[in-house]
Amino acid sequence: MPQRPKPATQPPLPLDCPLESVLALLAGAWTVQILWFLRAGPRRFGDLRRDLKKVSTKVLTNRLRVMEEHGMLERTVIQSNPPQVEYSLTPLSRELEPILDCMESVGRRLPR
Amino acid sequence: MPQRPKPATQPPLPLDCPLESVLALLAGAWTVQILWFLRAGPRRFGDLRRDLKKVSTKVLTNRLRVMEEHGMLERTVIQSNPPQVEYSLTPLSRELEPILDCMESVGRRLPR
DNA sequence: CTCCGTAGTTACCTTTTGGAACCTGCTTGC
DNA sequence: GCAAGCAGGTTCCAAAAGGTAACTACGGAG
Image (cartoon, rainbow over all chains, first blue to last red; front, side, top):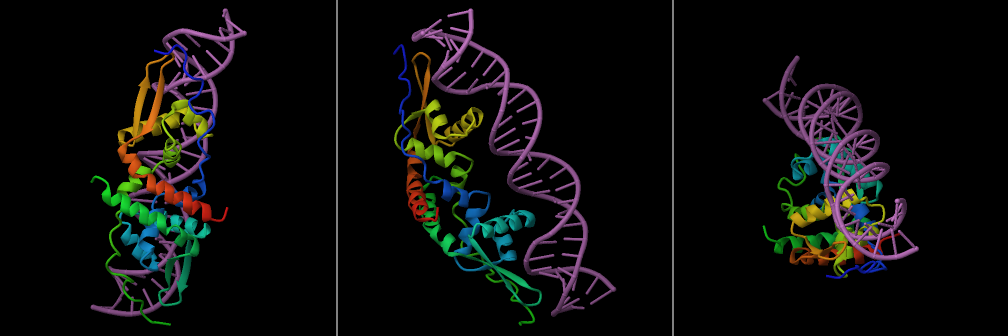
């Protein structure tokens, strides 16, 4: 049994973590799922509410607003009667798609 | 201007979302960063606290406990004086590494 | 004798988040 | 006239998350 531990295991940190920007975008409940369901094409508010069962309209609205502010969603109002709103991916959120692919393939090989 | 919108854009949802299991593992603040810093090798409690600046000991302890319960971390007590605790990746968390790689490369090509 | 570093634990408080329920205005179908 | 579907907005409340500060126990350094 050593009498004195080494002062610190790895004095310098092993590379600063460059994931913050990505994590900031993906943070928040439902964010990733919304991206997932929009990959197949634009979807309307009510579609998404049905896709994400168990989400309340308030939370969904907030999420969509925040994602839009982050430039991850485009919101298009269709002038019809009643008016409809379509959400679709942007160039920014398309950059994130590889992460979804990766999560999917990892999830498939995971137990359960 | 159409008089009546289509009843629903995509009646069946475009594939049920298979990301839940992965998202459940990665959820929670600091989780991904902890995995990131452990990739280089086992690290001790104090190391991680320094890696993740701005994290309180309480929150870090909670995170580590939860991740251990999920089978994502191995906790090893080193019988020294004072005793030390080392955290390391498990087979399960190693399965998640591709996601980290992917996030890193996406993050690099993102603005900012 | 006091402080430092080890790895936490505990109590307390604030902030954030999320959910349920109800509301709007609009039009169509019955 | 009444209900239904569209896209939300609003209010209230509960739960969860997170931060601060103080505390534990151990030995070594000064």
